[in-house]
Structures are given as C-alpha cells and as structure tokens.
Length: 369
View 1 (cartoon, one colour):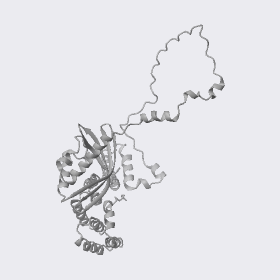
View 2: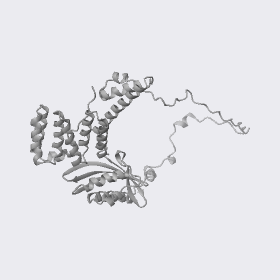
View 3: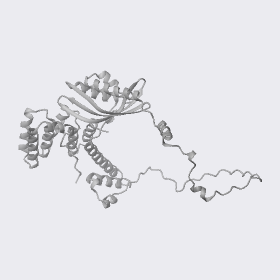
View 4: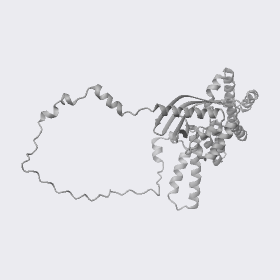
C-alpha cells in the first residue's frame, strides 16, 4: 500500500487568533470535527456551511470543510475549496499543501509537486510540505525507473534502484526497524570514481650531507631529572590583570554604526511593504537576490506585485531584531507580525544582506531561524 501524504488540519499561523475568537468558535470547530470523525459528513458539512454563511473569510473553518469533503468521498468539491483558499489566502501554505495531497491521490504528480512547491515558497520552513514533496519525488522516481527498466531490461543497475525507491515510497523509513533498514538494497553510483588502492608515494628529496660538528664543541649534557618538575620562575608569569587586556584585544569589535545601518534598512523595507511603496520595496533587494521556489527575479517581482497590490491594507511590524555584521555581509533575525485583509500571521524571519555601495541590500530571505 502506498504511503499516505499528510494533510494540514490546522492553520498554525492562525491558531492564536482562533483561540482568541472565543469559546463559540472552538465549540463550532470541535463539533464539525467530531461529526466528521463519526462519519456524519452530511451533518458536518451542513454545520460548516451555517458557520461560514456569517463568517465567509474564516480560513480555519474553510480548511476543515475541505477535509470533510475529501473524507466524504467528494475530492472534486475539496479541490475547489482549497483552490479558492489559495486565491483568498495566498500567504498561507496549508491550502497549497492540501491541494497537493488531493492531486497526489489522483496520481496527478506534476500538479502535486507544483502545489507543494507553492506551499514552500510561502513558508520555506513548512516541514509537512517538505515531507510530502519528498514522497512525490519518490513516486516520480519510481515511475521513471520503471520506464527505464521496460525500455532496457538488460540494465542491471536499474532494478535495485527501483526496489529501493518503492520501499521508501511504500513504507515510512523513520518507522523501519534496524533489520528492515539493513535489508534495503544498496544503490551504487555507476559513475563514481574509484579511489586508488594505495596512495602514490612521492620520491623523497635527496638529503643534504650533514655538516661536521666542530671538534671543540662539547656534546650536550642531559638535563637533570629534577628540572622537568621545577615550577617556572615567577618572572615568567603574568598576573591576571595583565593577561586580560591582551585577550580583549583579540575579540572583534562590534561595528555599532553598521548594525544601525542594517537595522534601519530592514525597517525601511518593512515600512515600504506596509505602505505598498513597490519601488522602494523592490529596491531593498540586491541584484544578487535569490528568490525561493526557483523563480526568476522578474517572475518573483510580478508575483509579489500582485499579492501586495491585491491587499486593501497591510501592516508589517518587526520586533526582537538580532543583527550580526561581518564586513560587508549581515545576518538579521526578527519576529514579523503581518496583517492584511483580516489575516494575521506571526513568524520568525531571517534576512541575509550585503553592502552594495552605500546601502545594505537583501540577497536571501527565509521564514524561521
């Protein structure tokens, strides 16, 4: 049996907001979830629809509705629920993840891969999507090896690779016993270079003839045994107050001016994002900026422009900034509180920056850290 991919059942970024919404929200959500667990899908969907009729923008209930639809044997309805969620909440990775799981269930592996990559583009540290994407790659690899074996049955290197991939895809390797792991076929790289059995020895350099010692030089006298145990002379020691300044000189000095410049650049970037000043926002990224998700710079800018301009209002607040500057590079970690169109997301973020001319520019960004 093929290993199941993992659905997202809760919007982690909205959990605190949901808890603060009060007991009524918790009761509605729990009731829909309980009805679904009991197999009462019609009642669960009816309850979800009643709730959403007055709160159509509640992402958590919409996510649960899609899961109930899928469990009720309505994958097409679930698919549409998650597609609409990706349109209404493009910042959330969970709808993309669940969309990918349904595509994978339908054996639409290319679409599943794209959906998981979109989830990771939204949140690169989303572990569930990483695991699901790896499983999809495993299934794609299995299909490719199987095709290769059908074309060339004489290729002895393909069969063990296919067997290994199938076992990984079918089973969860993290739950295999030591004996099961040992039984997995070993895959040898056909193009791996073979190391020489023994290293090649270099010809030793011709030794120089020893210079004759002067006849008058006396042979060295052996040190008395007691000398090796003698304490060093007091003059050779340095008191603690003399050693400390020397150690302090070796520690690199913190460039407080550079730290302030970096933090100001980050705050300006957040302010431009919040005010939808796209010219300043894009200018905060350096010419070597590496967008996530294998996008080109122009594709990334087009996507960001659509997301930012599509919001009626945006608030981006940064707290707990930790900055490390080394020469012309800097690493900045902070907590980012983002709000837009009723969505509230709080997460850790890391920016890698470089000095370009007189300005600090972003060259890489990631969620987490």
